[in-house]
Structures are given as C-alpha cells and as structure tokens.
Amino acid sequence: MAYQVPSDPHHDDEANQAPVRNLYSPLLATNTEAREVALQKMPQTRPYDPERDFLYIGNSTFYNFCEACGRDDWPSATRRLALALPVVDRGVWLPIAMKHLPRLESISIVYPKTAGDIDRLERVAVPRSGYRVLRPLTQEERDAVHVTADFWAENIFDPLHVVWRKSLSEHVDSARDDLSVNARREKVPSWSHETQRLCFDVVCFDRIS
Image (cartoon, rainbow, N blue to C red; front, side, top):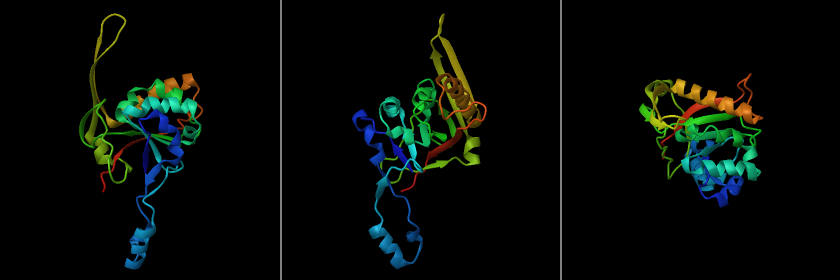
C-alpha cells in the first residue's frame, strides 16, 4: 500500500499515525459466514507502517518531504520510497534528504501510464478514492514504455536544446547513475556505490476499486 505525504507542511509530522486503507483480509476468501464477519470487523484503515508500505512522494510534496527529513524523526523509519516520475529530475535534492533515511532499502519510480511515450514531467494521477496500491510493471509494459524529453537547459553561453527518448531500463539506469553521483557527495548512509545497495523498481498505481 502507499501513503502519500500531505502537501500541507504542518501535517507531515503525523505520517507515523496516518491512515492507510486495508486492502484485503484472508477471511474474505473463506465461507460466507466468515466473510460477513470479516467485512463487519475488519477496519477500513490502519496506521501507515514503514515496514511494509511505500511512502509516496508527488510533485507538490517533494520539498515538504525533504524539509521534514532534516526536521522530524518519522522519515528515518522509511524503507520503501516511491517517487512520482517528475520528481526523479530533482536528483540534487533527494540525496540531501536521504542522509536522514538510514533504513531506506528501495526506490520505486512511479510512472503515469503503462504504454507509449511519457514526457519526463508528466503528472502521475493518484487515485482519489479506493485503495492506493503500487504494483510493478510487467515485462510487456516495461517494453512498451519510453520516457521522452524536449526542453531548453540553461548554459553558461547559450541555452541548450535537450531532446532524448529512452527506454524504461535506460531511464532507470540514468536516474540511478545521477543519484549515485550526488549520494556519494552527500555521504548517504543507505547508498553504497560498490554494492549498489539500494534497489530500484518501476511501478504504477493499480487501478482497482
């Protein structure tokens, strides 16, 4: 399950008590009587659990999260970080925040769709209702997605026109390489350039009701 960091910076210290919707109980797969009991007794929400839940960072919450990492205690428990695709371009800021995430084990890039070309800044639509579940992209989906860029970058002399189109694996590799450079500079405890300790994955929101 995924918990989304709130956009209001005054509430991000409550993440360790934030509600996450329960997706499933094994009792729902049993007989009718047990299923009815499960539906009546199973709570609709539970507290965010950094041991098994993703902490999702979207466009509007990235800088709040970075500030919270250096200010509050709750981010230090984060194990699974999920970044919206546009956030990946902010690689300089992320390692600064990661200095305060000693238990971080994985970074997942959340893509807005599972086929076709995707602009590097395309917004990820977070489900407004129901369960917020992140799932890995299938191999077929990984082969079907390409990330594109077409923008003007500032340069010392003249603006530089940047245009590229990368496969999903190329995009993840480039994101990992960029993060590696900055992580070494910031001496991030969870990052090891030699062992590539952090796992990287590609995911999307599962559109279930």
